[in-house]
Length: 286
Length: 261
Image (cartoon, helix red, strand yellow):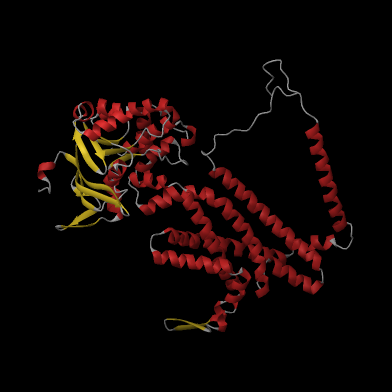
């Protein structure tokens, strides 16, 4: 640490530091007290949790949850970008269609949409492609219904996140890109979108984490993801609380990884945009 | 080989009765103006007189509603098929813009790219040059505007004057036949104006064709070949700096010059 340049010394004040310490101690007492209520009850069989945490059935559920999340997320990025481009386009028909899509899929609960897709066969029993006619019920399995419901729903939110990012980029950027000879499409993809990503990533990250947890809703149509598998184990073994804890631990683990990835991505995208360094301690404070 | 305008081969920009309206508001009310190859053409006039709009029409950042605007051998916003002119396709307009540099009032550098990447952006992303070739040219240009040592800096780490010099390097990177300057010093602190004008003065000396919208009357007088005074959407007076600035016979020009001096 740098030593003070002059003899002048600024004295530390103790009062605010003591108040901070007292507040921290109080908060710790409350947290530990609550932990004591849960753990100290002696009703939770921890060995069961350890036993089932890595059971093959549970791991299959984790894989299913990851698949639902990643496919819905990637699909929604593509569909959301198209919808966002439609919403900012000057073509009134495209703009209206995209707005109506967002209005409908953002306005109805994702659980309702998932159940709807699962029951699609009720009013559309057959699909005919050319001479081929297929019963809907062979196409719409619990997995495809879950994917369809999640993807279409999260696309509506993704559209708004991407549109917000595109609007946040100054119009001068587009003009500069056009002036060096880019076509409007290339200017959008090469200049505006990379800058919009900075605004999009934090919001899209929250959306991805919400989506990861929202995949648990599809257990109601029998999809075997984390909650579905743990609930089915619970119904056979009556380890209800233990299985919920197993599910929660997996969700926490997956969300932690996602949060870490998100913050790394944000740091990377912020390059060149901040000139502020870390604040050094004051050398003349003693 | 026949040119449409055989007797105008020295002209790079020709406007005839150029008219532009935003809604019910007429901004340009029939502008006639010519820029010759190799000429430094200055456009001056009061705020809201349509100077910037006029400039932005030249590279299609604005469309015009009536009249004719020719650049080199083409009609801006249109392309020729057979003997008739049709609306220009986006990639035709883009290819034409690549031949015209533009410097903006607010610099409009790409904030997520270094100074060098900004300068080479058109070479790499539009002309498809390799990084090596583009960066050699980019360094040469940064050296010309005195910023070779800041090649790796991002726009946020540069002063306004430095940013505008990088923007000028970006505008001339693809060796355009014309550069448009839209109030290049209006967003700068007074002490930073000089370094940008110095770079522009060098370009004039090299014989670069340019159209400059500015409030720097003294600079226009010093380096300009032609000065156009625009007032109320029309060209009120055109001529050499000596005619228009030093010895104007137009009452509106004299009044404007007296006001800003």
